[in-house]
Length: 119
Image 1 (tube, helix red, strand yellow):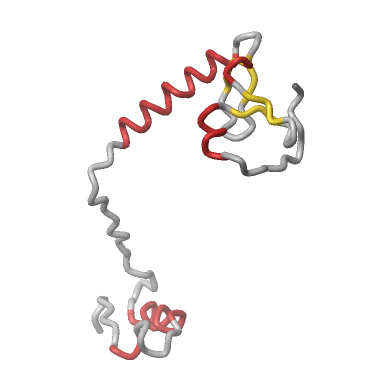
Image 2 (cartoon, rainbow, N blue to C red; image 1 turned 180 degrees about the vertical axis):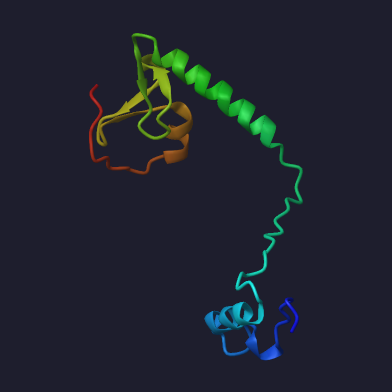
């Protein structure tokens, strides 16, 4: 008896659809009882630069911490980044501050909040 599992044509996804039975059969045919390693095979075809992403996020968080340490700063109610109060607009109806980028994205949409930010 061989230790290598060779699936029969009826046990795959197009067969009876019961993967539990095929896994049990695989263990039974393997003397150790262990399942063979399955490679995920993920590969990224694009040229996305993760190092640049991590670096830009570090810069953003460093800037956020710097602004947060100032006396007249508060968070945007949408992106939660800190800004000086003069850079934010308070949306009276919803009760939160919003930065310029988030305000553009929201447009005229009303976004109710669970908790109101103090003005």
